[in-house]
Length: 216
Length: 271
Image (tube, rainbow over all chains, first blue to last red; front, side, top):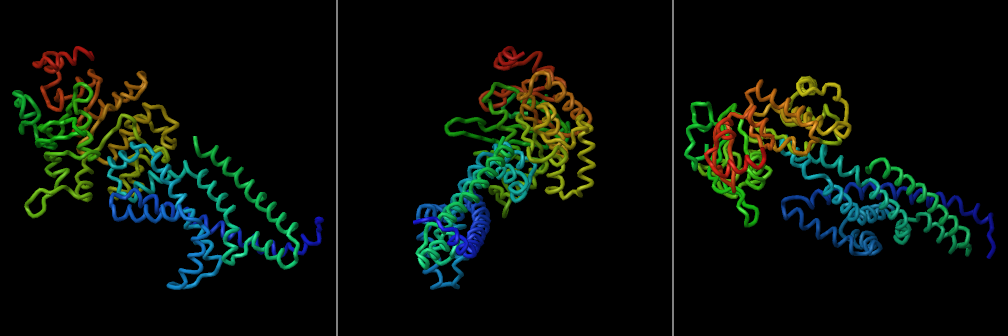
């Protein structure tokens, strides 16, 4: 099989469609993972067992089952009770929910890393709990964990082709569809492989730079 | 001071000195099997400066941490300015205090820590204004004005826009003192505030505290190993041993002519 630039040209419009889906899934999925993960991490530090235990159970369950199963569940099972969502939205929720259980651990480590004296000083000043979290603990905790969160964004990028299986045609999904229609796989798959490197490598450089700045 | 000592009349617990501000009533604190405070009884009158001395592990710091509600007593009642710190009255009975009640009573107490515990993510100014604004509801301008005055008092006006990490340990501790004072506490707890400092920085911090002790009517509870400082500022000194006050009295008496053999031993070892 020889490399044919005309095939590349022909694939490009669909490639860009796929890039758009990949980036949407990645950005929205990350935002969801960052937000939900923080909620899990704070809930798991609650003094109330009825808050702590269900959250621990659910996050352990999600972390220890395959993302693909979760995507199938969200796409095929959930609509039987609730509203059906577009494949992309389902993919975003699946990725975000799955990775939130990992970011929760990252936040937890960051929160544990804040010295006990900071909590004690907040108590000594009678700061209310919300203020203690938002003004004292989280700014210090998150600063330490930004690089670790960034690594999960890259991991999520590499897992993003899974959402093609429920019909959200991101880059690889478009390449595969193009290949099955034209029987040309070499060019589209290669283009997509390069695209992953082009997105992931600068991102990891950025994370390393952040790490140097933030973690002292 | 302690009901267990025969020296009651020479100490701050007598009403003649003024209103009783702090009272420990049969307070016991254990860590596992280890009894740190054993049915402790003592009280401090408003405006007094009381230094707690004794060997490490004798419960001095535990007393400050109980007052700051960083620890809860296993038994007994602590009263601050007429309010129970760890209990509240409900239907005529004393029940363990809710978070809200505890926070209200706690506002009367400020603490300076051995390790400063400044907020590293905030500049000096905001370290001092954070609690007045968000706890007392003070206006931002008023809080900043107050912070400037306090920084002047501790001699750090020019560092107002720095982060704690840009300051020396002694400077950080002086900011921490200003931060505690910004809440206008009735009681200031000083927990070995110079122990983490390089020796040449100790004097600056102690000078600030002497100034506060001599120019304000704030009640102070001090745990320190700086005996000259204790002698300068204290109205009373309490000698602790194994969770009990074994001797108390004015500093001249305790430092020069203690009654108790254990006190003599302790002072002999550290002076």
